[in-house]
Amino acid sequence: MLKLYSYFRSSAAYRVRIALALKSLAYDTIPVHLLRDGGQHNGSAYRGANPQGLVPALQMAERGPVLAQSLAIMEYLDEVHPAPALLPADALGRARVRGLAHMVACEIHPLNNLRVLNYLTQELGVSGAQKDAWYAHWVALGLRAVEDVLARSGDTGRFCHGDTPGLADCCLVPQVFNARRFNCALDAYPTIARIVDACEQLPAFRQAAPDMQPDAEHALAR
Amino acid sequence: MLKLYSYFRSSAAYRVRIALALKSLAYDTIPVHLLRDGGQHNGSAYRGANPQGLVPALQMAERGPVLAQSLAIMEYLDEVHPAPALLPADALGRARVRGLAHMVACEIHPLNNLRVLNYLTQELGVSGAQKDAWYAHWVALGLRAVEDVLARSGDTGRFCHGDTPGLADCCLVPQVFNARRFNCALDAYPTIARIVDACEQLPAFRQAAPDMQPDAEHALAR
Image (cartoon, rainbow over all chains, first blue to last red; front, side):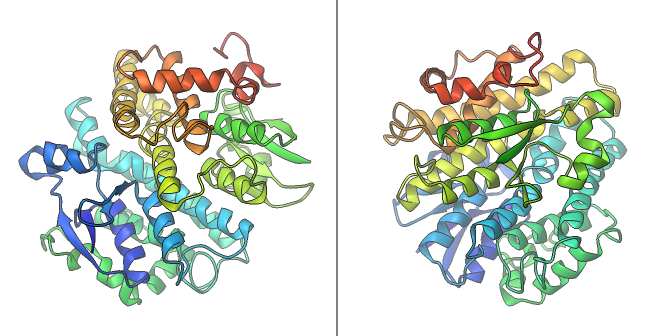
């Protein structure tokens, strides 16, 4: 049985949960609480499995190899369990979908995750309002670019690429979930809003959502 | 002829230049200066080609499609020009190499690029010393994790994965170049230092370096 080291609110773990659900792959969740015990991801128990100390990580079997980095995990799942595919069949389409996924994973999320927000307040002493403005700035810049790419391409369909959900949707939905949680306005991104609505109608996306996780703290999961 | 929108000091462009050189693919460099004219990447001319306004971008032919996001571009090149391969032949190996590449591209570089450093000084008013400490913090955290992954795995060879250079090396070398430019100490990462030395002995890596670019400003390129 696959084991996913996960935290219900981790955006990167959420991506992998969607991919696992789209492929109907069963797994056990091993919760790693990012706030308790000084961050369980920093503890030696978890670092023994994943020396990066980041969630998610996917353990392939009892004592099997542990994969880290959400995009690498999703590419692996797509190679080993090819149906339904997370990437299109043509190389240009794959480049477009990977590019959209990386626009979220390399341009927005890394600036807004917990350890970065903690550094801003604890090391640089920025105010709560400045932290929120930082968060909103990178979300707005990043989603603006994603919206422009989606809105001007005929490759965009019901989902980011055509009419089946894929790697880009797996990244976009958790990012939009986070943006909503931080009260970032999404009115300026109608294509993104439409695609996220379409995703959220699918059981796989629903099942992967933070409030559906075994470690969910329900006051925080929406 | 391929056209690469590039800036000599851009770490993400440097990755793609290495990949192109490893595959002996000829291309024209279209310089996009990130500092002149308020940042040429923000201008309408470049945004017409790449609405993300980030370098690099790869144009496939005169009026052909433009690919963005360095990792998506390198994956595309590897699919369309498979030899020499940037990814190993087995799925677990590919996951390991992609994971290492993403440790650089998602965990270190996004926090330390020009627009982020500008936000820190211009919007948050942090001092030069605080900005340097921020830079060094994310480099140290990220390279520590990369070193641990590399040092404890038998898959590490002369390069990040085995004895041929690949996607992870394409990401690691530009990151180490940047770290050196910001005077970050690398003594604690002997495996990384050894691998980067091995890379820098190869003509492809040498040819892709900032000081070898047509738009290089030599006082800034080392």
